[in-house]
Image (cartoon, rainbow, N blue to C red; front, top):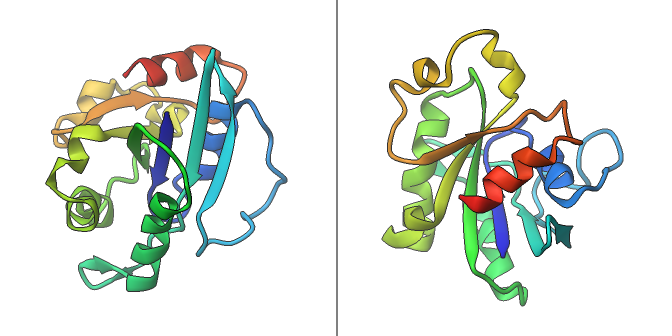
Length: 164
């Protein structure tokens, strides 16, 4: 299984990949915010491939062309599927930019891509007492899983995500 992590700056792609793969990356910004990182490893009895796509920089209503090309690059890198696109959105930071991600994915990968997409809400600890239903009342159309980046040892989060 190959999980493709997409999202804007600060959405938690590296921490999510670390949690999924049971690894720890060096602190600080990733090696490059404009290059996809492909990582592999076992997770909960499965072999996973995790693709950290570059930070999505928007130019008008489209992601910059070079970022789109780099996001697609993993398809020609020998990475095998099945592919699941995880749209990472920090709790409380659902903006117009995040709302554009599903449409952008469809333009880049075709209309069936959303059949293989999940919205992964990161920073679940920031709900601060609100229910997930309350938070998601306006955002519909994708399945969801909330995970906390502050509890990487909580493997139930990984199991719940992989079962989706």
